[in-house]
Amino acid sequence: MLLCAILMAQVLALAIGYQFVIDIDCAATGQFTLCRSVRGMVGGALALAAGVGLLGVARRAAFARFAAAAGQADAGTRRALALNLAGMAILLAPMALLADGTDPARFRIAVAIWLAGGVITVVASLRWIAPWPVWRTLLADLGWPVLPVMALVLTVPELAQLIQPLWDASALTLLTFALVYRVLWLTGEDAFALPDAYIVGLGDFAVHIARQCSGVEGFVLVGSFVAVYALLFHRTVRLLRFGLLVLPVALLLSWALNILRIALLVWLGAHVSPALAVDGFHSYAGWLFFTLLAMAILLVVHASPSLHHSGARAPGTPLRHDPAAARLLPFIAFMVSGILAGAFFAPPEAGYPLRVAIMLAVLLPFWAQYAGLEWRLDPVPLALGALVGLGWVAAQGGASDSGAELAAMLGGMSVAGAVLWMGLRVFGTVALVPLIEELFFRGYLLARLDRGGVVWRLVAVTVSTGAFALLHGRWLEAGLAGLIFAWAYLRRERVADAVLAHVAANAVVAAAALVRGDWGLI
Picture 1 (cartoon, rainbow, N blue to C red):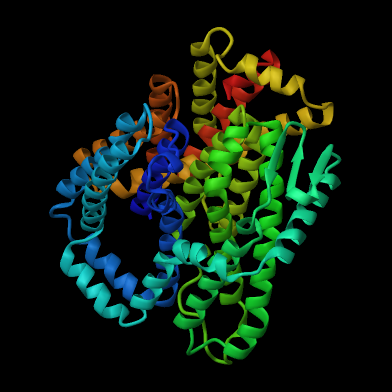
Picture 2 (cartoon, helix red, strand yellow):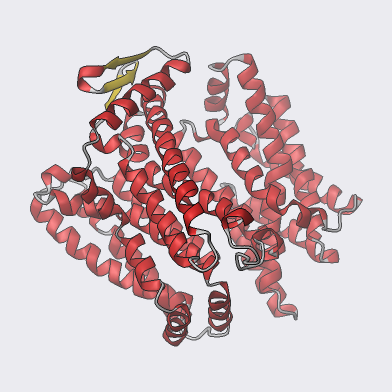
């Protein structure tokens, strides 16, 4: 799971680099179709990840054997990691080439470099995860379904483009246009619409609802994953009931999501950033949202006995009982929420309520596991945490760099909105973040690396503390705090003690932020 998170972070880095840092004009490359296909690879990566996830659910035993075999084979992983990083560097290198323009000659060179870097990165990533014999065994265990599944998910972006000319979607486009305008109008904003040109907007920002905005892409993506699920679980699922109920509902939900996505795009363009709305949200949010919607629909289907034959159980142990998932998934969601806040809000802290919602959504399914930890109000970790908090505030000295920006943001809100934001900020900082970070850094990373003996314990503390420090801007203070939290955990080997120490530290910092009015402290 950690490797998958790293690989997805690399995909996000490529998307940000070539969408926000470098402005690639596909019309100027002389190869518009190829350029659009390259830019669409993020959607392909999301579809591929989701397809592999479905295979993992359908063939859980095969993937369990694969994971066990991969975990026992460490030879060559360092070399594979080095090649992975080298491939990433090659993939990012054309940013310098395209910084001054995207003329055809430069674009052709960039494509050649991307091809080389892509091959190196993909091959190295596969080898990093497992040796080649282990991959061959997995493919043999998966059998024939892996071929149509992977072929379908890899071609979903291209299929969405190819199928559009086959649709006479003018009525659907008109209905989408009208409902987007109605959604914007219901928000109380000063929305406007030009029906003859299919233009809808707010203030100085407007978009054109083209045929491809009618929801066809969402239909293709969601419909494809519904078809993949039916293929993988054809022996257990009630196909007639599945086709008559699940497919229509899935398509309807994808269309409704498309309407909300366009309305949100217009709102972002009018109130946050036109460049962000057009270059970032328009390009990638659709694929992300539709993929998440497809996975959510199939999770509901997977857990619905009425859609499966009696006596046929969807295979696999529920994820909520997996201790590793309870420690890893909240942290991954926490990091992704930070990326989303940075992409869709200015300043990013304005999106903290969204981050709280995401953190809660991922923590709640595992709540029974967290409640089973040894929670005791031990004064030692509480006192250590309070000292960490006091030291953090004292080391800050004067006002934080972001304090003035956040004060201006709060000043532009209504009283109720500002109070709600501050309450969620304190709640997330004091209650949610300590639990998520300690579960990952001490409960998973430190515990996983600590194999007994002084040397391994030093390695475990150093790596977990170093990673914790890198996550925070003030690495020296964070490193010292990480050492104290590690000691709180190792004192009785109770991750709950580390959580309590972290809670106490963040509570002190939050109190200082309230007193000073400096929200940049937390």
